[in-house]
Length: 371
Image (cartoon, rainbow, N blue to C red):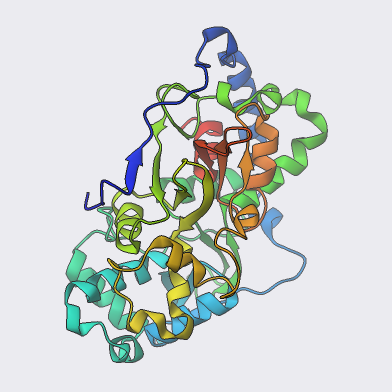
C-alpha cells in the first residue's frame, strides 16, 4: 500500500485496561435471539417503509460533463447519484466519490494532463468507458464490475440490506416500473443502511427487552474495528492518519483498504476530524482540482475546503465525527448511525478522545444478519 509510514499507523498499545474478560462478553444466546427478531422484522417489511412522505431524488444524465456532475454532487450535498441513459430509457449506474478519486489519481499520474479541459469535456459516459478500459472487469478496488444494483419497493428490507452488503455499495436505488419488461422506470428513493437502521430503531426502541443486545456495552459485542486489547480480538485492526498526512495518502488508503472513512488525529492520537470518500467532492469547489497536487496537499488543507475559510480546523468535528464511549450501549450507537449522513461512529477514550474503535453501518448489519 502506497502510504507514508510516518502519517499512517495501526495503533498497537493502549494505556487503559484489557476488557476482553470472558465474563464481560455478551452471551451467544442473547446474540441469536436478537438476530432472529431483527431478521424477522426486516423480512416482513418492504422498501415502501423507506419512502419518505416528501422529498427529492437527483439523477444525472450520462451525457453530462464529469466536472458539472461533481459540482452538482458537492452543491447538493449528496454522495452518490443514479445515472440515467435517455437513449436506452434506463438507469444504468451510479456516480460516486470513488469515481472522482480514481479520476484525480489517474490524471495526476500523467502530470501535465491534470487540466480543467479534461473534466470539462469528458462526459460521465466517456469516463465510465475509460474506467472499464483501465481497470478491466473490476471497479478500481479489485471487485468485479456489474450492472446497476437496484431494488423494487416490493422487496423486503432484509433483501435490500443484503444487496448493499454483498455488493459493497452504500446505496441502492428503489425503482418502480409499471411494465413487466422494466420500461418507464420511476426512481422513488435511494435506499441506504442508515434508512433501514432507522426503521429498526423506531420499531424496537420501546421494547428493548425483545433485543437483549441493545443494552449491552458495544465493547462486549463482536463488531467493528478496534485497537488491540479493546473490543473483540477477531475484529479488524484500526487504521488512522495524522492531520499532516498528504491527501494522496488518504486517497490511497480509502481505495486500497476499501474503507469509506479514516479518523484524523492530532499528535496525541486524539480525534479531531475524519476524512471520508464524499469529502473529495469539495475539490470541485472553485475549481481546486485544476491545480491541486495530491502529494503536496495535507488532509488539514483538504478538509478546510469544505468549511468556511475562517473556520478553525476541526470546528465541525462534533457533527462530522459522531462519538461514543466503549461503555455506551449498542442502542445508542445504532441511533446515531440511523441519522442521515452518518455512516460510522468513533469509539473514543473518555476525556482524551483517543480513538479506540470504529463501528460502521455495514458492521452493524453484518453482525445482525450474521454475515
